[in-house]
Image (tube, rainbow, N blue to C red; front, side, top):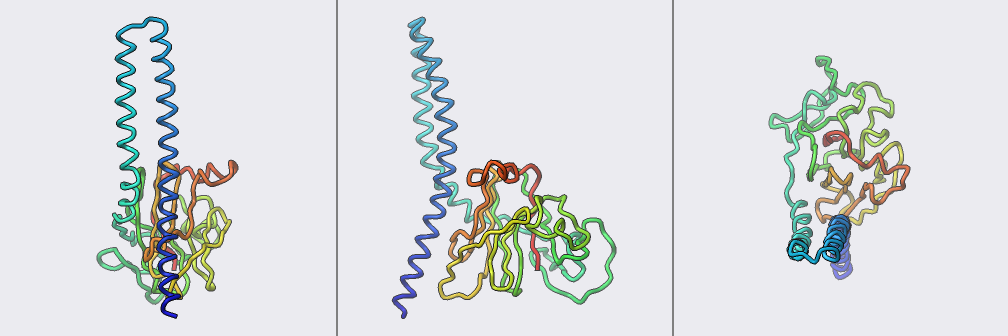
Length: 267
């Protein structure tokens, strides 16, 4: 019924809000832990100096620490706003035509891809010659970034990020998104949505109220924290999250990004 659909839509919206808040909470906790550790060290030194010397200098340090706490509270109040706003600021995703498979052609403005008949094209070391894949022209090297990709055009696709070292020749796992240590993606194939990295996959839980398929996929990267989150860009519900915080010690190193990340698509 229409009431049930409305209930599902409301439930999906609240789930999306909870997911984003959970990500925000983790980032805030990490920042708070670091600042609290530094502050404890500083306070310990101040108290030691106070007990030994009872000097005016120690009193000044205490006043400085009080000011630091006030600044920390102000910073924490803005962290959630900043992270949520980051999801609304899309980075411009331009496709690098030199990387595209011969059957993929970039639009004149570089903002889209379309199929064309297989044709001979000049050989290029950056071009994928077997996998229908292409990379963005501008990598993310630090800080945060958010991209969106429209995936309505194909019955199967993969969207993610990759290091420049991703192999371009052949069809083995080294050149396929998510099947190696150099790339991360979500992939839709045979009516299944899976998240892939290092040739391992996990099922993505997508609730498409009133929709049979995803329309747009969002990718949010916190480069310095090794965090990558995929979203349903229509509802901002989380599809999957790769994070050093959430992985085992064995896998954690693979989620500390060490090279520039290029947005990548495969159709």
